[in-house]
Length: 195
Image 1 (cartoon, helix red, strand yellow):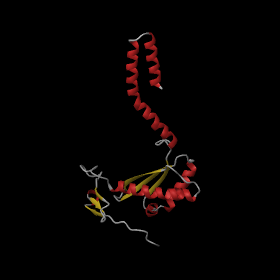
Image 2: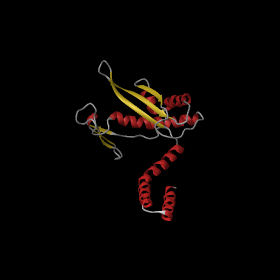
Image 3: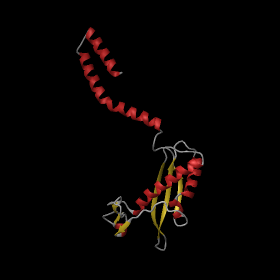
Image 4: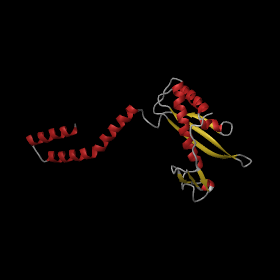
């Protein structure tokens, strides 16, 4: 087996302390949901693990899709990591991996997720020691790119409405104070501004 790289982190103070790395890239004060007053002071170890697992599994998911001949785009992976306690007071982890694969058939998405679960290093490390559920999410959180462009255009038009309405309102006021040729000119101006 060939070592590709090694990452190092140092914990001080346990679950309520700090985590740093010798290279300075990581320097975190932890929060502890089980300790009053510091619940949200910083990320807890399960949140850090969820971030790391979702990134690692996502890489495995992209690779699995390529190997199965179904490249994916715009995918997201959400990891939910729970600290659980059994009847004897021993702690463990329960994980849910949610994948959103836009435009993909749910059965095919499930096959890709299962293949990724076989190759992901984090999944391998947890095998037999933690409960890991694989869940195919439905595409409802993000519109497809072509709809996103239209949404951006529509929002820009909506933001312009107050200014256009103010201009039109002023023109309509002017229209009420005029007659004949002047009214026709104001009406034409209103129509031109509305385009």
